[in-house]
Image (spheres, rainbow, N blue to C red):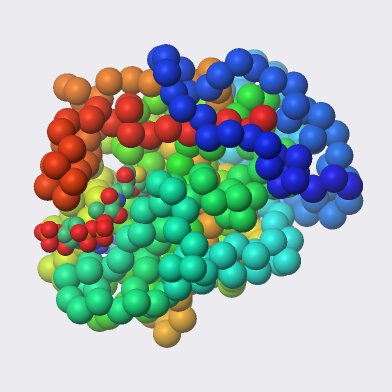
Length: 348
Ligand SMILES: CC(C)CC(=O)SCCNC(=O)CCNC(=O)[C@H](O)C(C)(C)COP(=O)(O)OP(=O)(O)OC[C@H]1O[C@@H](n2cnc3c(N)ncnc32)[C@H](O)[C@@H]1OP(=O)(O)O
Ligand SMILES: Nc1ncnc2c1ncn2[C@@H]1O[C@H](COP(=O)(O)OP(=O)(O)OP(=O)(O)O)[C@@H](O)[C@H]1O
Ligand SMILES: O=C(O)CCC(=O)C(=O)O
Ligand SMILES: [Fe+2]
Ligand SMILES: [Mg+2]
């Protein structure tokens, strides 16, 4: 089997010139997916299957959030339609996860410095003394120019599922490797409940999906993802900083008026398990009560047919303003609209 990362090595960083995240349609991805065989085909499991509510009077047109392509079972489709997320067990091979881990460590040691990469530190570290190692890095963002990490986004196992939500012409819009640190006691390792769409100036939301892969066993002890099933059917809510006593990480906005009585699902995942979720799904992650750094890798994918939006006058203006002020203060760069900041990379 040809490795997708080799096939994709020729892709260039996409520079947006017009109103669309994507360029011309291409059939190349389809050809690549034709190579997919073996373990990936056996790795499929909905989470948790018992929650799927399958109607006996099923009609294809009732599906709004998934596309017809014979990858998902009817149960999996219905689960995503109802809940806004779907866990596929054992999707990313262990050897690939080890490569992402190695590259993350090289980045932390500053042996490589991918263009465009953002390095985030936990607020308790960012506001204190400097530690020059992995322990200082809470997440890296925008690794689209790093071929080793970007191979996560071109992994055929991942793309096969992404296509069920975006269709065949896909852009990698935003990437992260999250290294949730042991909580300092101030609860700053938490990520408040939010909708990822708050950060994204492109639409339609149903053509966007996040793939998030556990790089180790993750449960409530080390701060698993926590989702509120079904909230993808709602609208984008206003976000702002939570009023947490111990402080909160920069740009970790949360939903102000979420209903605390809505049932939460804690996603317990093993290494390689991957959750695909809708950008309106309300989710967060809990405190890391262990001494280890909990790792996950993720990418937000969008259809090339998505279009950019102007966030001025919307609830998203708050994140645009915050980014503008930060860039102005740090680099003296004047007002860049959010839609010019988030540039994806096409999967050719
Ligand atoms: C799906 C969604 C959730 C994903 C997203 O968030 S998409 C949103 C878009 N995000 C981005 O574009 C990435 C933005 N990130 C960045 O620009 C950088 O990583 C920064 C956050 C500015 C950090 O860059 P760095 O080079 O470390 O800058 P500095 O050390 O000079 O810090 C700049 C000011 O920010 C403060 N800071 C940095 N990290 C944190 C933190 N974790 N919590 C609270 N405050 C923090 C830092 O203290 C400094 O503030 P001042 O001391 O100047 O007042
Ligand atoms: N006051 C709050 N406002 C907004 N989000 C919160 C608040 N308290 C907790 N959260 C968020 O709720 C989510 C899950 O919290 P929850 O308490 O269910 O699990 P946990 O913190 O992982 O586990 P445990 O309660 O066992 O410590 C996390 O995303 C967390 O950041
Ligand atoms: O804690 C995590 O790994 C998820 C964080 C998250 O939801 C995000 O960065 O958007
Ligand atoms: Fe998120
Ligand atoms: Mg809690």
